[in-house]
Length: 124
Length: 195
Image 1: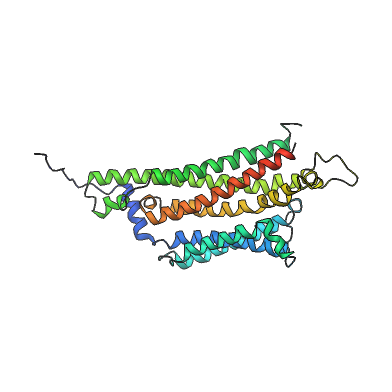
Image 2 (image 1 turned 60 degrees about the vertical axis):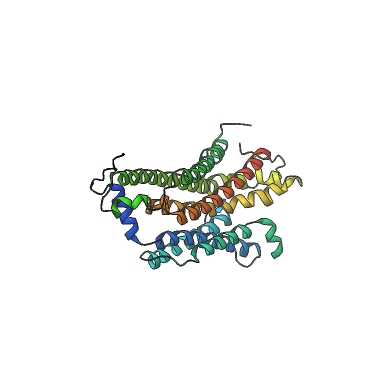
């Protein structure tokens, strides 16, 4: 007859304390805020590229040798960080809405299409 | 052609060390997500039972170590990607797009002008380089988000099936974008190298 495994009480490990902190922390709000913000930053870049190619709005060149790319990328990074800050504040203490990841994928898809040069010909 | 000129070295560091390192990091992150995946609840088991079982405590410790490693890999990958993007935009791209002085017909030192001067290679700028300018920024932002999640939830993320799928999706997108951009970079540098 096999003896039953002996259970012994052990103090919570560092891992367990970390896991408990994660579990009590905030649901997935802060994580999804970071993820959706990345999608927003990507879409902002795509939109700036499309506007530039359509001749509606050209981002200023913030660093001459890099041309308009320096302005477009800087504005997109600002949009990303602002979105991350606001979403983090709003969602850090709760679970994120279920649509957050689907929207992230949609925004990233938009960004990829918008930065795809053949698409620019649609806008002349 | 001078292999060890400053522009050539900058291009190699940008393309091989930083971008190549980021691609390796993305692949390792994806493999780590799969290899280090923990059954649901393992990481928190020791605490949930009030420190009940040495077996569960050990499992939790292994999960935590793997979570720490995963967080480190994604963070290093994000840093490499940002260095590649910033270096590419502010150091390499200006050298690439430098316009030749009026009347200069030897365009070997002016890669963009060289590509645009030939109808057979014009697409490398109009398509390849234009993609290279923008798409890496998207990958850098997505990879940063992945690294943030990996660090913030490093004790539980490998035992959370839904979050693993979300992170795997972002890493696959980043890897696809960076790999495609890397391929364009190889094409451009093969026809009009910076040296």
